[in-house]
Length: 275
Length: 284
Image (tube, rainbow over all chains, first blue to last red; front, side):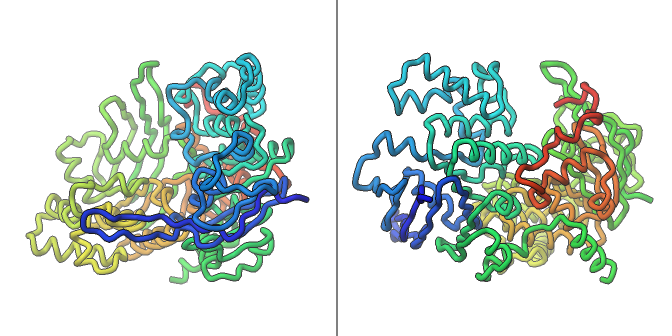
């Protein structure tokens, strides 16, 4: 097995302020995080807002450079702070965002949304772009008649399918999913998670799955990394992390997750009756 | 006597494509000191039916009901002025997005005191004392100092606490919480749910919890109503709903929880809903 993604000691600082009277200061968003993901596997990154998980996603997606540390994609070292990003590199990593209402251009038809990555990154003729977009549309569970529609004509779940289709147009090997189902209803969430699992099987995709919903993480992840204030406080195989959390924050997180099984409802009702 | 009693509530919106029925014949009742959860996905009419109770729907909505009574008062025949006296005092509502429901131009102290001035007619000093007491009650540290904070200076969880403080300022008999924790982190969600339930017990309020999260239902509710496409699919106490769901839709919802996953794919609603599709008129 080869590691599709490997990160060694990634650090990202942001410099804030320096206004008229305010002193500039440095925010350490990510403080030295290392991990690796093998082909066809899923790494879940869990943490609360402000813990640096989306910053990490931006580094991995080659949107922002890391302040320090090394990033390898398919064994190749990438440093966008030094070298310009090549189209080949850009095709390898794609990202899907949380809010399917914000990540699609309202003035662009779905066919054009799907064709655009090919237009920018390849010199494919228009007819082939069209064919590929159509094929991908069907792959994610939409139909031919959706090709010429605008984003506002779709529901949240359908839009997330479109976002997934757009990310897959360039045949990436690594897909970064930044809270892809947290804006969706429970039933739609199940459909999108199933779609992601199907696509992973078919294309041997590698996922970096960012979420704060532990029940989703437990379902989809192979490895889990828990982040807290920019540090990875827990990193290991899913079953190990869930069965035997070591860090206090992970334990708090597990305790806070609402439980929907009959035994815990009974326990709560009993507590209430006793009080 | 039930605190809130609704029979056959229908809410229709006039749209360009004709009448759209968002709530289709829902009946429910809430007893004093009871926690009722209304569960459903977006478009199931769960928020709209509660907005109808509060009288907060836009003019394009047409509300009809056989009966809609709150604490012995008929809500259907109430004049707007009478309703304004009641809403915010005897029944209050908390919304999903705490950052968006507070006014960014005023301090939180002003916004809490505004309710007290309108409904309780308290003097300035009394209002300030009560506002400090309320902030303390909802668990905000240094309440006296925080009165002069603006919403943008607080975190999402703190803003939701302020919203709760405003809602309970006049000791309401009924509190409606519309997805109070959807925008919050899991750890903060736990704190807010604990706060809501403890306040509900302390003051003996009726609490209606609107949510799509089955975990939240399991953690808070006494009784549960499941809604789908404007119709009530099932009503049961919380234990029997999880132990022995009667409608196919509830069963589908429960099996779509990743917690309950068996095998490597999740069952979806369409696997279950063959015979129970509501009539086409209620389609979203």
